[in-house]
Image (cartoon, rainbow, N blue to C red):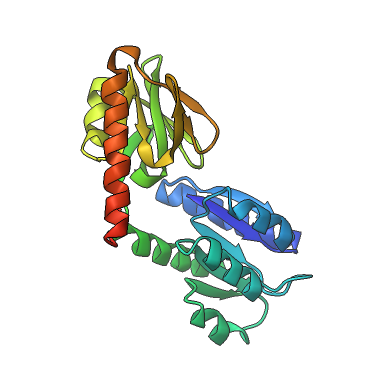
Length: 245
C-alpha cells in the first residue's frame, strides 16, 4: 500500500510513522510511506504516484487540509483520506467530503488501528490478493498493486507499486496464482506483467508507466502483442459501457 503523510509538524509525522510500522508488522502487510511537510510539494507528486491512503493535517501554512483533500479527490477519486488534526470543529465539513476517518490529536494507536481496519474492510470488497511467504512470514499482496514479476536464483520477485517482495518458489508453482487474472501477461520466459501498468511498447520491449522496460519474448512476440492489444480493446470497450475493471 502506498501511503502519504502531509503534516507540517515533524513530531506528529514520526509518531504516525511509528503507529503505521506497528500496524504493518501486526497485520503482515507492506505500507510504503512518503512524508511531506507542505501541501504544495505533496500535490506535485499526486499525478505521478498512485496513493491508496493519505493522512492530512488540516491546519497547515498556505493551504488547509480541506483544500488539499478536494484537490486529491479531483485528481484521484479512488484515494482514501484520513484527517489528523488538533480540533474536532472541521469534522462535519470533512465527512461531507466522504473521507475515511477524522482523528483528533493526540490520538492513540487504537484509533489509528480502527481507521486502518476500516480502510482494509472497504478495499477488501473490491480487491483481490495473493498470499506469499517472505522469509518466515506470510504477507498478502493486492493483485492490483503488482506491476510485474520475475524470477532469479530460485526466488520469485514480485515488483509492486511500493516495494519488491521475494518468495522462494518455482515459476511453475507461482504462475497459476496470477494466470487466472486477465490483466496478467506472460511476456518473457519467467516474467509476468500487469497490463494495467504498461504505457506502450517499442520494438521488443514493454515500457511501463514507472519508466521501467520489460522484454517481449522474440519467439512469442506476435502472440504477446496480440494478447495485449485484445486486452486494451476489451478494457476500453468495458469503460465505454460503464463497467468496472
